[in-house]
View 1 (spheres, rainbow, N blue to C red):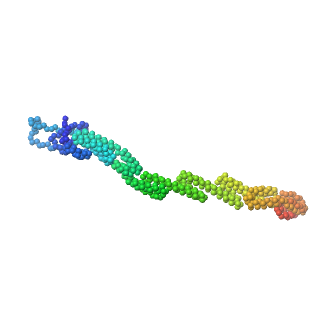
View 2 (cartoon, rainbow, N blue to C red; view 1 turned 120 degrees about the vertical axis):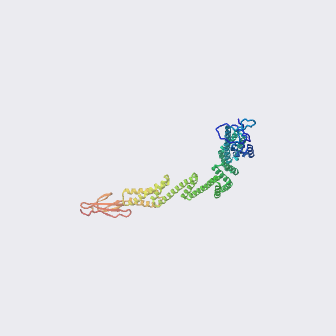
Length: 511
């Protein structure tokens, strides 16, 4: 069995085989190494410390080129001749290939570890995992030492352990990034400026090739840098709000939003400012509404209260104001209709008065004044017609119906006499006229004694020459008739006051 190589032996690469075993490397006596010796590599690794394994790939021995065979100067010495030295045996091919495979496996694992460690460093692991990074680096350095000592299996195990540690640490990077982003945002939200800057700086280091995370960290750093100025603007805005100086508060808030609109307090103070402005505008609108209501400017009051509702759709004062506008407007309208009705009534425009009362009842059918007014105007219009009829017929139609109508008209007028002096005078005149119309007057009828006379609808008198007849004032028709003569009709009037003239009824035209 071949012996393990000594530190002085060169490390020769061999073709890779599928053999899994790693035989001991034979000593190659009589060969000159082409690379640095193992003691040199070991000393360099110790001198470089942590960085020793970084140079392992560059410092690994290379395979020496084969020397040309010496020319034969004579016959080959006989094997086993007395006094001749025996040459050292050459490495077994299987052992040489297995050793090279172990060496390449160790180097490949080391390269993967170096790549992952570089990625960890690019993501700031030296800042957030210093001890873990030092531990896996120590494992890799132990692998370097074993490799330089020719303990390839031990080196491979150390490199694999270092790689596993690096991979495990790398697997934590996403969660660490998220946690660090949350931590940085929390510190900034607390206005802990120094802690926020440190947290975002670490997040920036952890970002690596994550562009979005790097942008977030850079934005956080800028926000942290501006936070003192933001806090100063917010303090000025709060003081202005306390003093109800809305303009100054708005100016300061605009400054804060310009610096960092997402900073804590900006939205809250902006909402407070808007709420206070809305409250002030609401109070002004309500005041305008009630002032307009007191001036009986119902349109202005309604507009003001509706404006208040746009500022606060649940404002009870605005709802009450609108309800009050409706009530006051109705009251004013009813009062106006009542005044108009009374004015028309006083002016004798009873039809107009009736129209106003009916308009009032259309708005509120329970109004007592409108109900009474409508009834009074209906009666008054009926009275006006009755008076007109009585005045037209009294003294013209002596019938009982006319006289009865006149008496009923006078009774109908009784409720209005107190309120209407002119009507009282008119009724009194009608009453006097009625008395005259009821008083019969003597009328003298004359004829030739041959003509038969009758007063239509009154009395048949027969033939007469002269007869007195008591008749009520009014229009009458006397009819005369005689055989062989044409009938004669004589229309006459019994006046109310004057003495009636004599009425002649004589048939003179022969047939």
